[in-house]
Amino acid sequence: MPLTISVFGTGYLGATHAAGMAELGHRVIGVDVDEAKIARLSRGEVPFYEPGLPELLRKHVESGRLTFTTDATLAAAEADVHFIGVGTPQRKGEYAADMTYVDAVIETLAPLLTRPAVILGKSTVPVGTAARLAQRVRELAPVGDAAELGWNPEFLREGFAVEDTLRPDRLVLGVDKDRPGRIEEVAREVYAEILERDTPFLVTDLATAELVKVSANAFLATKISFINAIAEVCEVTGADVTELADAIGYDDRIGRKFLGAGLGFGGGCLPKDIRAFMARAGELGVDQALTFLREVDAVNLRRRQHVVDLATRLVGGSLDGARVAVLGAAFKPNSDDVRDSPALDVAGALHLRGAKVKVHDPEANANAAAVWPTLEFHDSVAAACADADLVVIGTEWRQFREADPAALAGEVAHARVIDGRNCLPVEDWQAAGWDYHGMGRFA
Ligand code: UDX
Image (cartoon, rainbow, N blue to C red; front, side, top):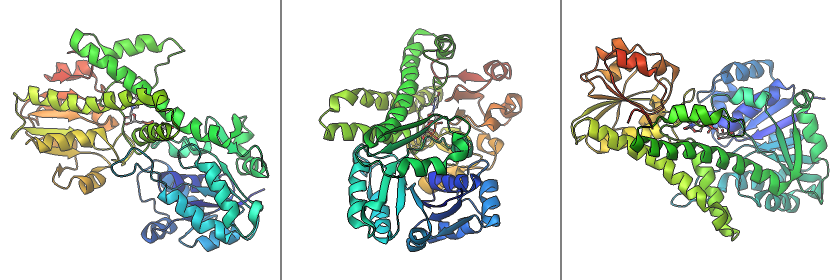
């Protein structure tokens, strides 16, 4: 049976979840405090780049199944289930997560709940948050104990957000085992279509569900930093980290995925999640358990410095006045997200050291320019590379992987490339006359 669902927060997570729930057949109300965003979404426009989402959103806005509002009262009056999909960014100057937005949703929504409702948190939160919020909801809601809260972490990847929402590899639901209530039953209704396909559905206590999410991201971050640490060793021994990753990846206990050595991880999740996890462990008195994540973070940030140092060497010892093209500004391809982007960080660092940096990203130029207005942005690979002394690949967009190295060699002043993502066909580039420098290979 279709439900009426509200989704609080209409960023990458919330907007995708809202459209996904409409696709599953439900009536959905997206809620946000940002009026401009709500106006755009109501017109069927997605305010960020996410493949497949504009089509899905438009389809359900047009059918009337998906609406957007800034009015939480409306959502509280009409919806049976309320999802929380607002951000939990890193607090300024601290490792801990900023819970302002999640708390604000609860403080706004709970006092409006005059009929039984289930709230499902999706945001990534410090362990212990859900229990605290469940208690707060019971205190604030006029309907009292009939307002229930569970935690249903989201594992979607940017660039594959629609696919991950409609065909997740598992669903996790945290409930208070002492007050199970209706939460599991309602979640099963929400996800009925997904569960029919035998998608694993794990019902846990609240703390486990919260920890599943941060543990998954900590593991992925660790895997990337592991291979990047090995890349550092490869760089001083002449070994090739990509061949090494292929060879260890055949062991299915290890697996080849997330062993891509390069500029390291960025984005709105992995970096801030491992830091918030360390901060929370410290509060809980088990900081030693996660000190290795400090190393994971440090290895990751060293990759950016490594590229800046390599660039300095390649242009003759000083970046002052060097013309550098940086291809890529998004933290990964198929995204316009520049949060904690390794590519943009490198572009900025080169610029601060005196290089004349020209950046091109197929989707992220505008977002990057908002962070670094003093960098030069170009609409094409050729324009960014014109007269360059050095080209740096910061994001492995298909357009860069498939660029014609011979044609590009004709645009630049010096055919020198740092492949920060080990994504170029090396032999083709070398055959076209390029001096090629990979990450953890061809040292
Ligand atoms: C991540 C998790 O994958 C997702 O499950 C969670 O819900 C949110 O965080 P996302 O941030 O979209 O998703 O990006 P992901 O595809 O995981 O990539 C993260 C970063 O790691 C990117 O900067 C990417 O370039 C980098 N990466 C990934 C590597 O450097 N090497 C790899 O082998 C894989």
